Image: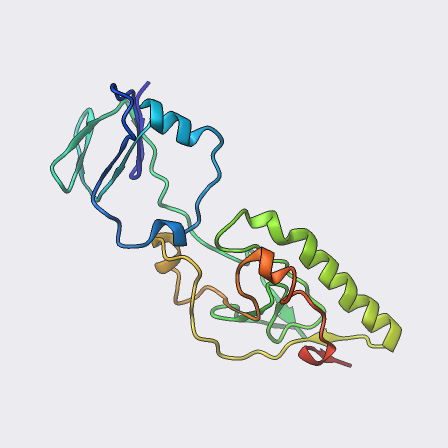
Length: 208
């Protein structure tokens, strides 16, 4: 079966070429969220997979027609651009009042502005979402150990306005940019954050 998406045309390509054709995208691919696909490069070299970059102009009964006029025959087209990016799928209430989470600040990918005693480990834009789960969990444990040792019952960070600067710029992020949380306090690179951003500084938090 031949199947296509907006970015990849999975069909045999004779000649063993790289399989990468099309116009340059509006973004730098290496700055985006690049999925690790074992065997992808080998299949590109052998022509088992061909990649097309371009805007979809229309669909026909048996093909996708790109803005360049190229027609890509396929039996199935998988649309992978409809992600509704949401960081909170539930209501958060403080003192009985619902907290508006639109554009809320997210400190070090762990605590949300103005919401006490709530740890919400968040991944990183550029790599697997779970890559920071363990370091952030350990970070939360250090905070709770400090609270226990000092006799504190509450920890929080202040809610504040942060300029929006997402680490990646695909459409599913940009169309939600007006409401997604504002990240701060990290470099958005796990290898660096694990060394520096995840260091515990009690002065960066409000304890009581």
